[in-house]
Figure 1 (cartoon, one colour):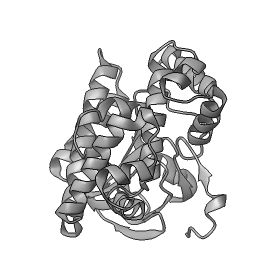
Figure 2: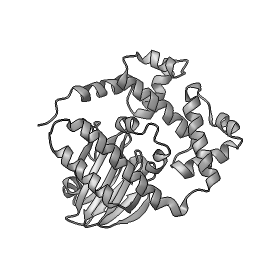
Figure 3: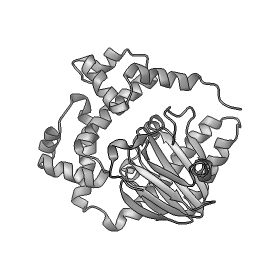
Figure 4: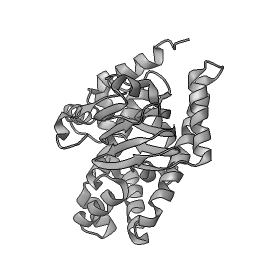
Length: 295
């Protein structure tokens, strides 16, 4: 299992699928798909989905962006969107996989401090009892059809992500960035929130923070896993998705609202980022909202 040919790696919503999630989130057992592939899932990525796996029993090997990690009973695997991953499980491994769409993540991760930085780290770490309990509750609620199911799933998703963020923080604490660098990233994120509609470039943020663009990008990548430029672009695209999903504004109006002088350029930028055009994205959101739920 290797990652030498990244260009050939498949991108899926769920493994072997190409459509976005039709539900609040998706939860299934590790065995559900693994057994279909002889307990080995080839390298792939989920461009717009975040996955959390919990191994109850059994084990195996996980590959996260080319690094190999041993799996063990009680292992938490955090797979942020866009990260290449592969698994080889021992037969009869038990556990769950929870998959959360970026739209749900956007709703949950508002004014929650530096949680996003922790969740952006692909890793294998020991799961706490609280995290294991949250995952079991997600599975139970997802599998049922009780009253207020969607509302409860949203709440449980936030709880699950909170426990994952804590586990990631504990796992990475020994190699934590120096306080000065951590503060720099926090100030960068605050500036992006204040100025993303003005289309500031990396050089603009670096100037405001009194550091070089190269240093800023290095610190941002070390702390979040992505470059400063990607953080800037991601904030704009996140706002674009929110407008497309939750307003009736036309695509051109959204483009101007987001500071784009040319709606066609916005459409190209969004399509490059999301893999679909703004209109197709909005249609997919509408289709998911109106789709009947399985009983």
